[in-house]
Image (cartoon, rainbow, N blue to C red; front, side):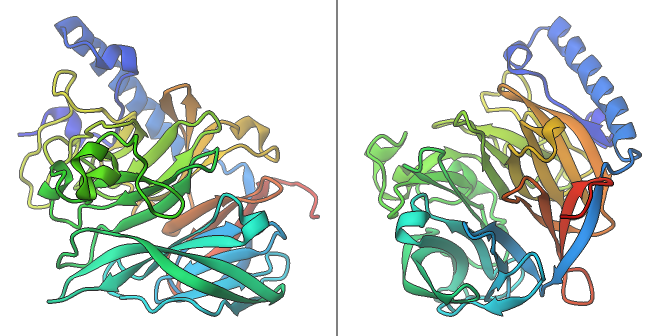
Length: 401
């Protein structure tokens, strides 16, 4: 059976110095900190929102967004459309040249990210799901050049696939397929879900259940931790992951990830080279059938989450906030929560993340992004007329621009 704390609403793990210990005294301290975090968490939901929400546009199952240098916005819709949006007016148009996608379950068109040299080469990246043989499917990442004859008339040209999940498997869940470039622009990091198969996350013969590190063209860096093994293992930066839907770099190069747990046990992790994060051997949640999964423990040999939630919030996106519009929020992680219907903030303190705020948004939040002037932008999960709104969050009572 799970320990009593597994049924509590919110729990936290220890800072690094404490996690490394396993004496009875250390475990007592761990319980005290977890209890303090639960007490703090109980008050997070009740706080007034310090921001105003402005509805800008409506979408059909939006999944990701990114701002262009001209302050226009690209938004993916899961069924396979890429929209270019004027965030001042809400006007939008379809971008041409988008690939056909396998739309089923959690799959479809996914992330959209600008390349590190976009201002010079107009290279952009998309992730999506492609079908395979015998009712299989898998995520892919492609890159191409965004050419715009006019600001709202754009086409992706020369789109080439630079990465594939290996192997393709049956089912339509846990693709992950988030993209993040390192701050220096030298490397592309990808999240590759374990496709609801569990065991592949501990098997380096595939690239499922992992965070991957590639060159921008999809080639494998020679100094990756498992490069000498060749094959899919050469791509792996960290493994033992379930379903990472949020990747965000801090300016100092630390890579943060949020991860959907099973029934409970959603996580915030600091991603480190070559490390194993424990799924499905360890989790702070339980299986959906009610069967037990051992908790993370100080002596289990796996990397521990910096924070976790039980019951689940279903984190679906994440940014590291660096803007000036909300100066009190600098060096914070912002998460969109699906089942939690919330926007969540954690304060980053070096290599730790501390829960700070959880605002009830009254809708499933699929995506979070920082705007060019420091506003926080969120996409609701849903269809037109039933969620799917793009919201701009600005400080409460700020004069309109």
